[in-house]
Image (cartoon, rainbow, N blue to C red; front, side, top):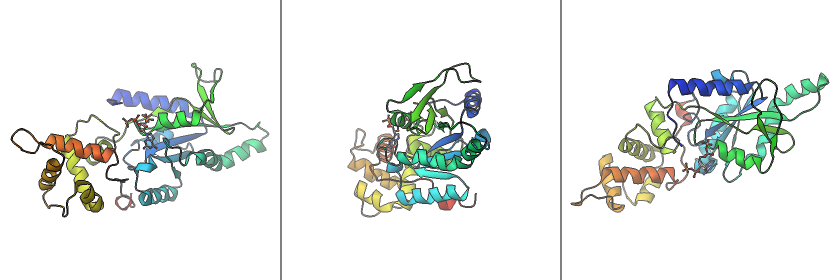
Length: 286
Ligand code: G4P
């Protein structure tokens, strides 16, 4: 799914999330474990304000697990609980309910002390497109979609999904826009498949990917494309990959567009192994 984000759409998306904020106790913010910062909405702090939050680093199966652990600590340092999950395979999902309970313990204790009847925690999932929101909701829903009546304050009945006994999830996630105006972030979003058709040039995306791999995962690059030494000039690496993969035009010249497609497809398809593109060392002073 590709969404064209124009200022009007962003304002509408923001309004929709803001409206639903008052219905929930906690926000479950989904980010892509391969790009935990680049896959966040640039205004998320402002949009959700003081609302308690749990961050899920989804697609952890596609990310570099050492780096995922570093990112979990990064969020912890900021006072935000984060956990690694795989919404598709199910790994880590059993931690969601206990984590929400832990984050909201004081609030629920206070409610109890005031004599209020115990109730389930209410939550909403937010995140940029393709981060795995629907996969997660479907996985958590099993068959527990509960139709509730009108919820005070909203005209349309909200559907809540019961997750175990103690959590109720809004069935529609909040879809937020990524920070695509930053070119480097744009490349990372393209390489992870968050943005499929992009205004960015495919060759530039492939070059960014190759340079990143060269620097941080050189052995994976050598193995995948069977090169003994990575050439200094990126064009030579393109030539070598293009030749091996048969990306040629008539006359035997390398077809750089086709080669770029192969590289981007390989990276998106985890053919070079799990990779994390956001590096903690570049963000520790933010
Ligand atoms: P969204 O609602 O946030 O837009 O995302 P959605 O659930 O549609 O997920 C986008 C793609 O990511 C889906 O692949 C989904 O299967 C995949 N996905 C979600 N969570 C995980 C995860 O934890 N691990 C892995 N490996 N994949 C996950 P798709 O339907 O095949 O679409 P695509 O691959 O063509 O993008």
